[in-house]
Image 1 (cartoon, rainbow, N blue to C red):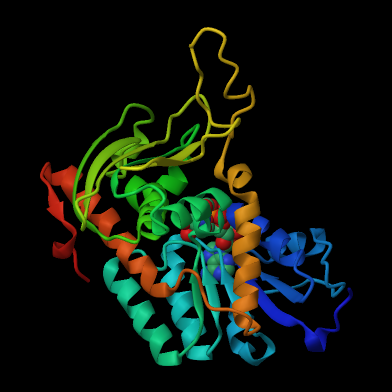
Image 2: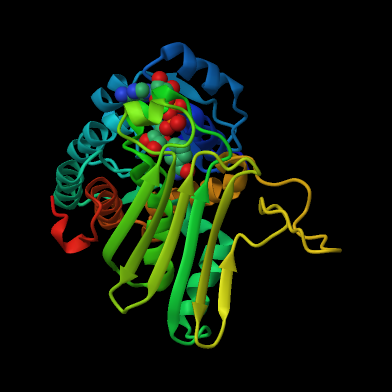
Length: 347
Ligand SMILES: NC(=O)c1ccc[n+]([C@@H]2O[C@H](COP(=O)([O-])OP(=O)(O)OC[C@H]3O[C@@H](n4cnc5c(N)ncnc54)[C@H](O)[C@@H]3O)[C@@H](O)[C@H]2O)c1
């Protein structure tokens, strides 16, 4: 149904890069959204705005990020998909303007910045949502339901991993905050969400096995970790930037009565050498955009529902803090070669 501009949710998207262009497409598919695209590069904003065919029938506008905040009364919501280093200032600007926002993970680059964002959001009383899209994935959601319903019995072990097929460019690595904060943070958030437990202690190891630029930025391209949850559940984690077979995201939860595994489907990038095995299929996932395309759409539709007063946020600003503390603990553990208690990681 074609909306009128007056009845639509007026949403500004900030940042139309790698992830932002997908968010623009997803927002344009929501029929009650009137979208404006803003990018630091005005040509990019215009190009993306003009490429969209909105379900609302309302032409997609384009503007500069500065104009969004100087004309805040023209908007009902903001979606932030800019580089990580800009998130804090944009979240604080939303709080000052009283605009509910969705922000790509992480909310801020460090713990102090994350704390400032949380306090500003709570002072302003605005709705917030952080881009942990796995909370909108059907398999993670079903794993959570089974765990919470007791169908696995007492959970004793979790194995989880996120492995990219090929490394991101050096320019991204320089700004990313490192593999734990950029990549494994999604598994950490999913672990908290699925099990309902908090991480108490971690031990991490890492190596650079591929491009030298990871070392130059104090990062690694292979990481493994052990985590202990507050009920004694033991967790193993892996993350990589060099998984030649494809983009691999899995979570295996094992308890006294059974198991729930996320990611065990035909596109999982594993090769069985069992005689006669015809699983998995021949076309593995290649990247997060393909693997989580539906989830990005669902998380933004849920955010628009929150803005429209039809629901509450499934991943609030405060959730970003807990996942970041664990990711930082992993980095400290790897650098110092010792176990780290998450309670010792404070803003
Ligand atoms: N949830 C996920 O699965 C996922 C995946 C990829 C990236 N991300 C996150 O999304 C964010 C963006 O990553 P990306 O890979 O799309 O980056 P990118 O560099 O491809 O795109 C960023 C865009 O923002 C624009 N920009 C820069 N500063 C701006 C500002 N102040 N206002 C408006 N626009 C601005 C740039 O011109 C660029 O077009 C990062 O924080 C990253 O962690 C999340």
